[in-house]
Image (tube, rainbow, N blue to C red; front, side):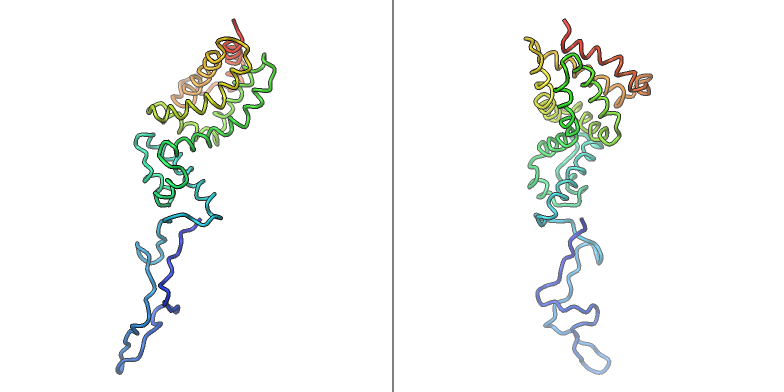
Length: 244
């Protein structure tokens, strides 16, 4: 989306330099006071001002997406504590009021960014939930590692994990989404008294591997073949879910 060109006043006359002048004396040109000069945006000619206020409806989706992209970058680079709504707005090229309009507080911006980054998990979770119970461990392992292996989905996940590790508010947002959208649904399939604990242990196994492999990058796990990791880890995850 391009910046908005600020028009002149209601009486402005097009024509560029020299338009709207009246003859004075010989060799002189006297400005006509009835003509309003074209308005120059702040920052000089050719500089588009940052968007202020609400955009047209057709631009709303694009603006919202740009704010979310900027938020993920800010949270990834600065962490939750050092990220501000003003910084997100500046990175997105919009006014801070638009960030508040679409998302509300910084916590709500972060939650929206988490939901977008977590969307691939939500889309693929049904394959885990629909699997025979004895295959849930492998399906869950493949789903989580697959998201981390894909560079497109890995980048926003890294931003979320780094923020969640360093800030309790960010951790709470991440926890609510993971627990509510994935773990409780898996636990609902385990007809066992400690089903939620089992689901959380399985998730902890996979989150720990993701942290060591993709965030801290400890060798040889960081460069190990993904399929080999699945073969080793899936039975452990299955054990957490259905083992004695």
